Length: 418
Image 1 (spheres, rainbow, N blue to C red):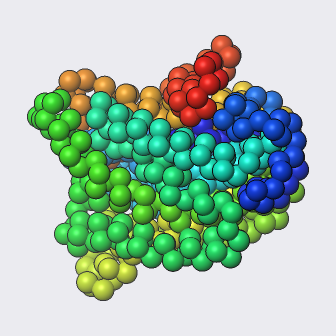
Image 2 (tube, helix red, strand yellow; image 1 turned 180 degrees about the vertical axis):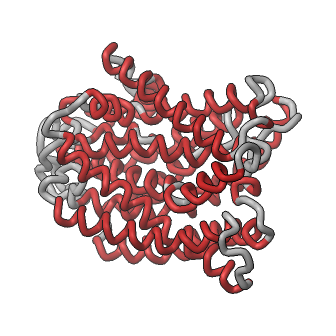
């Protein structure tokens, strides 16, 4: 997930995202040592605050997005509460959490590239490292799907890293043009998936439900494994624009140095939030029944506008947290420290979310999939995030990095005890 965030450092010696020229001698410590032997995780003292705060907040958005998919019927419970929850999700959660995560993942790729470059790594070695980490993320994501939850984002980002690592060396204009062009198929795939439930007046969450119902564990496992390749391909297509945008932002260190980029962050956050809300409101009105009889063209337009502008909204949320980090960094209170710790262990606590949702919703757990609606599932998401916040802070106090982060590093760096 974002164990790649380990490459943060407060001051770059070289323009972000620009490794040494191919074949040029490396500069810095260990210039005669290969990246495979030199690389090791960076210390917490080197990390910038804003990216970790953003990743901690991102886990709340992911919990909001995933928890409702585990219930059988999102209309259980209070109709008013469910309506409010659905409008909130369409404005701030649906198709916002994924772009935010993609943006932060792309940002982290550049951070790791810069860190390894400063340590004397050459481009070939760094590229191998990033791709190896990506392939291990794919493996971990597959195990996550097979054993735990049918919803996974690790494998899609891992494969995305493998495919997009070459983009770390292209010009800014190529990054932005590629992001814009790939935004078309990425938006279209989500829009087509949203159009049918919207046209039939049913919740998009109901259409995408992964509730177990009365299905047994082994049958669920078979279905997950068989559908995983298709889900992986679709997931990669949807995250590419956000990953590329994150690379572009990381080259400018907008989250590493939010104070220096405060004016840009304010403008970007305001503009992207306005665009996101304007694009999401029509779908929200249709889904909640306030817009009772939209035309077929209006439904199509709303289905396309919501995911398209959601990319801007997800990136805007990362920018907003960057602005919060400017103030929070002056005096790090207990909440700031806890969210930062959560962001530093986001891969482990993402898996923790899956464990909680399985225990709470599935029939071989508490079986609340039949009892809770959208509002109830949203409450479970908040409670799960708060619990993960507590777990992360306990790990911080104990000096424990996080089991998933430790596993990925050991696999990727090929060093005993790395």
